[in-house]
Image 1 (spheres, rainbow, N blue to C red):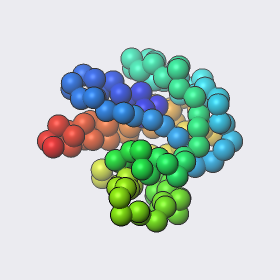
Image 2 (tube, one colour; image 1 turned 90 degrees about the vertical axis):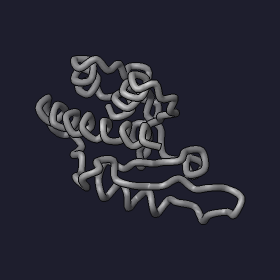
Image 3 (cartoon, helix red, strand yellow; image 1 turned 135 degrees about the vertical axis):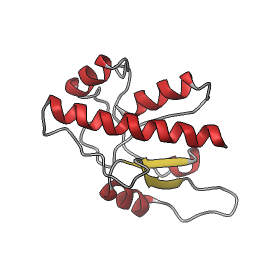
Length: 136
């Protein structure tokens, strides 16, 4: 859901950002987003239907400037994957997605209210992220 929100907010702000979504685990590689997440996002105007799950790759740390984890466990997992920096290649900054330090709970094992709550937090964090990019 976060990818769709960030892409739309960036476009509305006139920012050209390359946004991609990936997970630490390999469970759903190639799968479309969860139908419950698609429904919640679409109800708010975000179309994530073209997305497909993929796993975080080492190259992501070279291909992106910023990698965001949805919760503290994800950030720790990303830090464990971080390659040793080569002097000729910058490595992405890794940080928590929500600027307040709040975890965005995974709604997968919940119901529609859990997806709505996660989307509320994602929208809040995405607004802050876009403001940060605009300020640069």
